[in-house]
Amino acid sequence: MKRLIPLSIAGMLLAGGQAWGQAFDGNVKIGVLNDQSSLYADATGQGSVIAARMAVEDYMKANPNSKLKIEVIFADHQNKPDIGSAIAKQWFEREGVDMVLDVPNSAVALAVAEVAKNLNKVTVNGSAGTTRLTGDLCSPNTVHWTFDNFALANGTGRAIVATGGDSWFFITADYAFGHDLEAQTTNVVKAQGGKVLGAVRVPLNTSDFSSYLLQAQTSKAKVVGLANAGGDTITSIKQASEFGLVSSGQRLAGLLVFITDIHSLGLKTAQGLQYTDSFYWDMNDDTRAWTKRFVEKMNGKQYPTMNHAGNYGGALHFLKAIEAAQTHDGAKIVAKMKELPTEDVTFGKGKVREDGRHLHPMYLWEVKKESESKAPWDYMKLVKTIPADEAWRPLDQGGCPLVKK
Image (cartoon, rainbow, N blue to C red; front, side, top):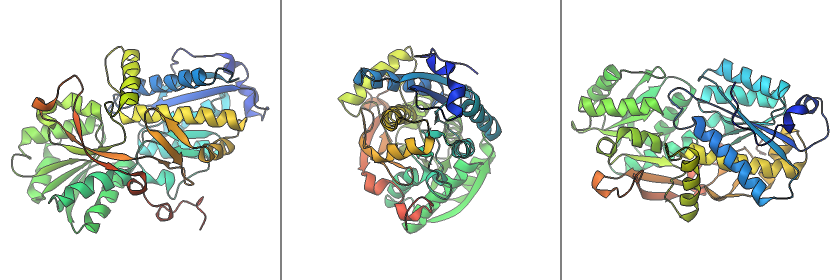
């Protein structure tokens, strides 16, 4: 288990005491748990660790009299729920971690959320899509920050059906995230009067999509919905282009796309692709300034994804809440996160809803043509802003047991 240079090591000395209910001592430990080495490493990985450290730096700068002593550690869950939950358990029980951050891969996210609930700690999820985190498996110890499958389906699916894409075939990642994203998008397509002609389930981290693309092409669906993410999205779009799927008249719908995917694909391949996202580096002066700092800390290698921005905002709000609450009790910290309004330079103003859903606008983007791009990573143009009250699943439709009837 690796550690990024800690801002304080004092929290390590009393970690064991916190587990036994010691009074709040100001030692705070954040564990960034994500994919450091596989298909989600670019969208999360070291960038999420950097984002967490930036949140700590900015919190301490804005609160010079704060008594918090904060440490950031990280680990790779390898996209395996058993590994992710084992790391979270060790962190919470033995290493004094107060909050686990990030956790891409919905199956891992649900497992870690259960550990946090059982041990009364906190998880702030910045990178998983499953709506169950704020639905039937919502928890008083979990906050879901950046996006979810309802918002992605609602943004992209609705826009594509409205422009004539009324028959769909799904290529779906075969685990909790993909299944949920396919289901959420199916609901949107059918509600708009469209139909789903079929779907195929694809193992995670697949290298050859040819047989799946052939099934999509044979279906004659107007739209091929990619209910996958990260490296799988990149591979499927590249191979769809090589396969001639788009040139034959079908449209691709990337249901979860990151700016790092566009960078890997190149504008020639990705141009015209529409997708829903919650953050883009070139939105305003605040996002540009924050991105400049992020890129410098990443040694110029990468611009931030919405996950990185979400993990920054989630970590910052957690620090505000734990200092206000003066406790290591996870449920009380999350209650304070719901009580306090949210505000940061990446997402602006918002709030955490009763079911743990962070509310902020979502945005429908279109990838620029090569001729339209004027600078490095200048990839997107805004199609539509989706206000928070339209972007997210209504509170009374999720089935969260925390929601009062």
